[in-house]
Length: 478
Image (cartoon, rainbow, N blue to C red; front, side, top):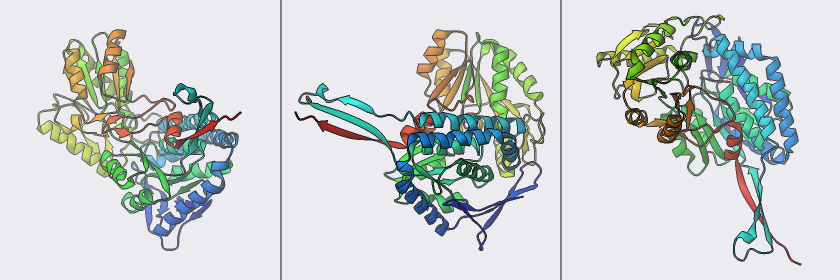
């Protein structure tokens, strides 16, 4: 069993009467670890330690050294891939194959950040572009913003933590990290690895506990200069309000749409959409949730899709053959089951799945759904996919855009002109053609519109969000 507490200025703080929480495997119920929650005094120490390390060390650290620390961390993580994957499987209930994939992505994020640490360039400006600017030059340099509060979710407890930490270190910032209370073990293990790679004490401090207790004093603290959060919209917009004047990046929810046209390669679309809808039990903000299929191929698509879903292996995430494991908690599985039952009571049909064994919700496919049903209009965050027919391009664009969310979409078509039309027409932060909404690589600009968030991730873009441009003007005197 793993026992962790807070991690502040290179030291772990636990015991001494701190409130404890068990971390249990959501499939077996076995005890994985114990977490000692941080106190308000721990939080204050973490913020102060991050500030002092920023002022004394990190903002003066040369880019090549920050790059080296990140590269060494990547090498160490790659060496210990299986160790981290097994921990992700235990604490998050993530199927082991998917857990290995998350570790591999995390290694890549670190390497991207290592490279970008050397590329955080400013610019030289021509002042004589303006009348009266003759004899002057201008320089713009991007400087680290300072201490960052990073608040991360349970569903990718390693990689989404690194989407905050790696760009911050590359930029020269320090971080106070508050990982999800359900999955803090891998985050703590990662931070220790970064210390082993040469990160100075206090550059990343970790506080553990319930969000309602730690987040308000963290994001409102005057020393915090930026807040980066991934999670639900309800929490995200509260954080934005609390953060007031601070810079904020919010990666929030979605009900990701995917569109299949008659000229699509149907077998490829089915294969990718099944994978995109049920990987990690649909617990991703870009997980396939709504599939709009042209009526000309609707019946064929549904038959192929349901047949493929029925072949998924459901069960113990520790088994190499498991495709779909448990949801993060029993409560999460019960909520999704209630949404399915509500949709059925309103006229939806369950073609497969729809039943639950404790936290294990079987992959569910719904048809005859309506736009107002929760399984369509809200973020289900579960292994539940709805299939809806459409007839015209204009109709499906309107249906996709009739949502409070706009993170990513997938479009399956062989018509390049249609692909570009949909790219322009869909109200999304990103559109994939002949791929699903669930696809994400870690270097492109990732972020949504409407209620899907504010700001961008993707390593280079996150670095820009964590730095501020500062201008120097020089008048040349002969």
